[in-house]
Image (cartoon, rainbow, N blue to C red; front, side):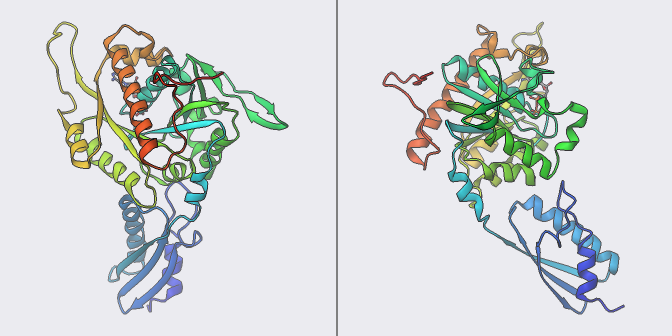
Length: 374
Ligand code: ADP
């Protein structure tokens, strides 16, 4: 059988973009097909430049083309298109919001939401005006962590425009995808619907004046994750990881993604969670269940600051489960550690806003405390 461009094109139509039902041909990714006897050269134009993304597409294409004939070899040339609208959208601040901190992890289950909720409450306790978005489309949990399960945000009229009013607890204004879907339905948030829902949480919400908006990102470096980071003016990203080898290699990929020219979001630092476990009966022992010192090594290698390490504590898990983040137990050492992390973040953001083009600066009075007008 003679292999033609039409045959290749129809096999490429079987390759779908991750988390969508759109194939790479209809998405306009396939720019050129050249056939040299048994070698197929393809030019693809993409906006997601991560290695992981390229590899997934490459593997699927090779699989499909080898279904035509396993004698065919495939060479793909990826051209990374500069996302035209990135700068434009990034430039637009969310009205009233001074700084946006995205909290990211390459893997799920490492404690990203736990860290996000405790940072949010710590910043509120420090006197800042804080908002929090649970953008974890794969399993929103913040409505549980803030004891707001079953609550539904209402719409209010703001200068003739209908806006979502965030719910509030522990001094933090909160919106979670969990308010809009039962956890069993989390799957509905994949694909374009997820992006649309997240955009509504960001732009169609009456946040009022906020010093900090924390965005608990979905885990990973997929398309949805990427477009979210590109569509909001992120001041900086805080990365959360466990010291486990498998989490670390993904964490490196995640950090590299933020550092890419086309994304270029400053990394504020990295936090190690679930560093070690100390049994009650052996208070001087530390068991490094997920390995020791892994995140510190990654931080040094990638030239980012390690800002905290949190042990595995039953009380942290219990506090999240009952909807009262552990920082509310103010006198505990772990609460103090979260508070100290929040203070470090404020200092880093102030510095970052001086040295880099700012989303907007943190407003402070001369004593260094936040200027929190009502
Ligand atoms: P992610 O947002 O990364 O998926 P979560 O914050 O939901 O992770 O945490 C996953 C689970 O681990 C939750 O049950 C949470 O309460 C628990 N957890 C997170 N951090 C700790 C910790 N330091 N000690 C004990 N349990 C923790």
